[in-house]
Amino acid sequence: MRLAVIGAGSIGLAVAWRAARRGAEVTVFDPDPGSGASRVAAGMIAAVTEAEFGEEDMIPFMAESAEAWPSFAAELEEASGIAVGHRDAPTLMVGLEDGDRAEIDRQSGLYRSTGREVRALPGRESRKVEPLLSHRTRGGVLVPGDHAVDPRAVHEALLAAAERAGAAFRAERVTDPADVDADRVVLAAGCGCADFGLPIRPVRGAVLRLRAGTGRPAPRTVVRGRVAGHPLYIVSRDSGEVVVGSTSDERGLDPTTGTAGAAHDLLRRSIDLVPEIAEYHLEEVSVGFRPTAPDNLPLLGHLDARTIAATGHYRHGIALIPATAAYVADLVFGADTAVRKAFDPLRFEEGP
Picture 1 (spheres, rainbow, N blue to C red):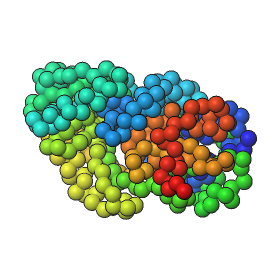
Picture 2: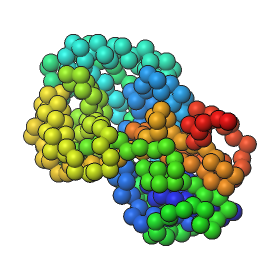
Picture 3: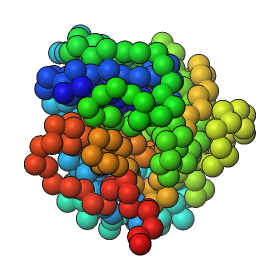
Picture 4: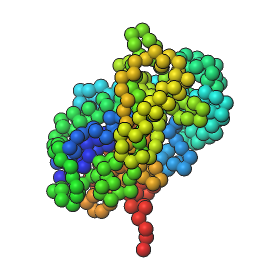
């Protein structure tokens, strides 16, 4: 079995690694591996707090992938020799104002429909869980099962693991998958899959990377919040890095549009929620583009007998790595796997 994987982001590399371990002769095509959304992502594994109304079909897949992440991370670290920063710190979703708390309460019914643990907390209790929260915090919910990884470390580890498993890499941009000499082709080029006719649009996001100085505390939970109606997340790494994000806009693929304003808003809101952030060092402002389908659900499945789509993960790309890699590898090898109709990449085509 000769497999070509177009795209060396984390999704493409995970598919390549899994397929190579199962005996496929894998070639990965990408002129600049890791230059897309994988490098900018915050790395939340949030089967509960990423649940959104209108995207309920994602919930089982997210839960499946979240359950797989601990063993996937351990296997990846063993295969690559690189720590991926998997942290089992819980996620705390809180609101800064009464309206923010009301919105979280509205979402809580959806969170509980995931079947995973969701614990309501008043403001005082939430500050006991996360002492760095502002005294203005109105409380929210604690989700012990929503965790995080370091996406940059994950990508580095997947690259090493795929190489060690025998995958070959070609620094080339594929313009037509039909020209690739392979038995199967997986399209995992993120936003670049739009060039192959897939209904993918880029959703821009800005992320700040900060660092707590020596002796400065960092949040011990993954903090997700709403500040005056705006969503926000704060993710700590064991290295002392603290990632802040949650901007979202659709302005094409311009990496510079609105960056200063987005950074200002993120800093202001994060300091409102966790005042200690004002004392951190600002190290990097990153802009990335989430590959997104019209209904915000992934495109996973056969486009034809030879070609398989693996894109459109929107804001769930890192969280869905294990489940996506397993599913797509099964499709590559023709395994008898249940078809995920909600993610059919042909679902937007008009019938006769």
